[in-house]
Image 1: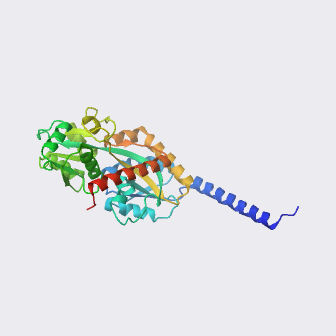
Image 2: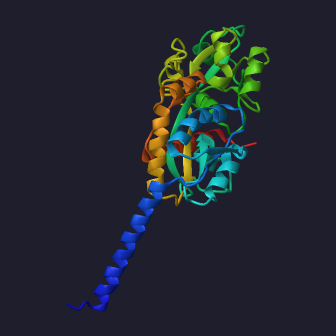
Image 3: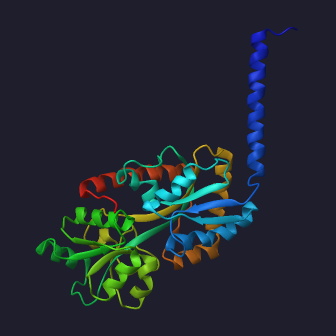
Length: 328
């Protein structure tokens, strides 16, 4: 039976599609074929850098290739994520991003060097890191309600430190001020450590900081923990209420970290990466070590992580606009 030219063209087209699909599947099965570069948008030794390094040995073992950390901090995550956005989309360059670079920065920086919604393919969430509002035990305010009452009685006179303009701690502080309807004098620091030190020394009465910077001082009684910013209480601080419980109903703000790949990375590669990442996060030793740093492992699907990034982008756009927040 003779086939028409049109039918021959169609058969050739479908054969080409099948070959491309088979090659993609074979490529995913073989992946990775060389060491993976992980661009971390934070400096060495920080909380995010420490957390991801807890996961990498297990992930590297599963993938059968070394994972090399490339620390590229700067501009709230924009420096490192620009490197990822421009990398070859073969799964051998990944990025560790957070709320700033993947969600909030689109409302802070103009122009942006990349589009978080278009230039990345979400791989999966790594961890959630709630913040804590801490104070000096000698400040006189014993509860968050005391802090709010004092701020209402003396608008603009009570100082509250945070980890720097445009950071997640800054955004969380702005959200707290907005929802509590109070006027605080915000003091930006270059990181959580200096803000915590000044609360300990009595230079400022309170601060919004992360748990790695404050947990040991809280447990030692040197810092007073007013409230945690998560939706639920934390296992490592079971007696500390959430901000919502302590006087600001509906408040919730959590720092987070997750892996992304360049947008054209094959779906099969992303699925494989996600499965191995979640397996690493399920390891009891990894979970225990991360919780000791004040972080909670947060496995997810690529779609769930993408949906979360979109929701966070909308949330922080409203906060930054209302507070007129600009990066340093």
